Amino acid sequence: MERLTTRRNLLRTAAGGSALLLARNATSRPRGANDRINTGVVGLGGRGTYLLSLALHRADERSDVQVVALCDVYQKRLNAARERAHARGHEPKLYALHQELLDHKDLDAVIIATPDHWHAPVTLMAMEHGLDVYCEKPMTHTVEEARQVARKSRELNRVVQIGVQGTSWTRWHKVREIVQSGLLGKVVAAQGTYSRNDPRGDWNWPIDAGAGPNAKGELHIDWKQWLGLAPERAFDADRFFRFRKYWDYSGGIATDLHYHIVAPFHVALENEHPTRISGMGGLYVYNDGREVPDTFLNSADYPGKYNITVVSSQVNEIGPPMVLRGTEATLHLGDEWEGPQGRDIDYARIVPDTPFKKDFMKKTGKDEIIVTGVGNEGDQKHMDNFMDCIRSRQQPNCHADMGYKVMTHIDLAVRSYREGKMYHFDAKDERAFAG
Image (cartoon, one colour):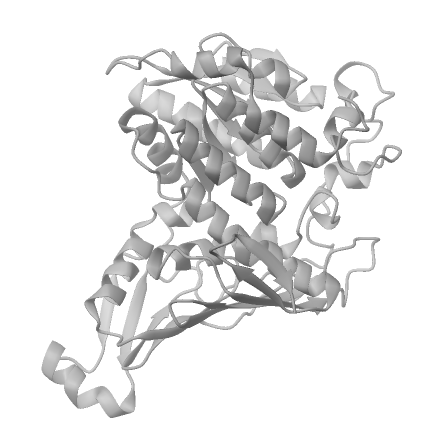
């Protein structure tokens, strides 16, 4: 890969494709009822290894998935993933370059769990190769990249699932039914949190001693490939093993944690671009060289006349309660993410506002309603939804258009924080601007 190539040119190349790739897309082999979905995984760090385990579980349960290819720039991770797959009866081919994996014969789908700055390039290349894509959140590094991915998904009729497992839980589809029933009145605000407290420094994952571009054997890392079109720099183990701490490869709390809150609200309310977005916070405690804040909040106004606010910290585990506020009642939801105040709650409460208590009692026969079966259902349902949609050609629960609109909220909140400006988004022209 030429270092002088711009990110824009790389994305254009991936989005444009060649006659050969378009021909492959047009003649993708049909998947019969008994045909296995040949799957590859790109990026085999902690999350990628976990997603591999979900694909292997699906294969064990339904025998309709085969893991045929694995890719990582770090040989140690690649070897470990191969052993995991071998233990479950799969014989994947190993690749150091995702460009080569995407040419793997008879590949149907790819799971992407690279650092954020590679999400768009790999996703676009995969779609042009005729593949369906499961891409970890965030969908992309920037909203402009998200727009390209959403458009290409529509053009090529590719299934794209963004890795927000909560969108496949019963919880948020029940919440949507409640909202649409009118029991809350008009929803005017939603709020949530994803907070935790790690005194050692969140994202300070272990660093393998001796690993790097000059190492031999399984400790070798292809640093140039990992950087891609991020700014060129000498190998830095902290950046490689703890990439979420740096703006070049991540959006920090917003892209890692807040995406998990905003996306389900798009399921519950409406899937639309926000119109006005702000981000605030700071690096208040962690002094380990990281660039991203340890405490962050974002708030966005939506054209449906409601606001979504997310408040999080990595140095305090108690966040504000997760609620949807309506003109007539409020829906109280336990916080399934990290914080102890609601982690194990699997029910929700609908509580009427004081002026509407009598009407609420007449409608429901109760002072408040307890909604059960709305707890954390794990990640497997989301992977299964992706695999099912590969066969049905239906839109998955966190499809590319939703990923794009959530990314508008997330990325512009990051820009607002970094630039100290309020951001706006014109949905008609798909244009972001500060002001």
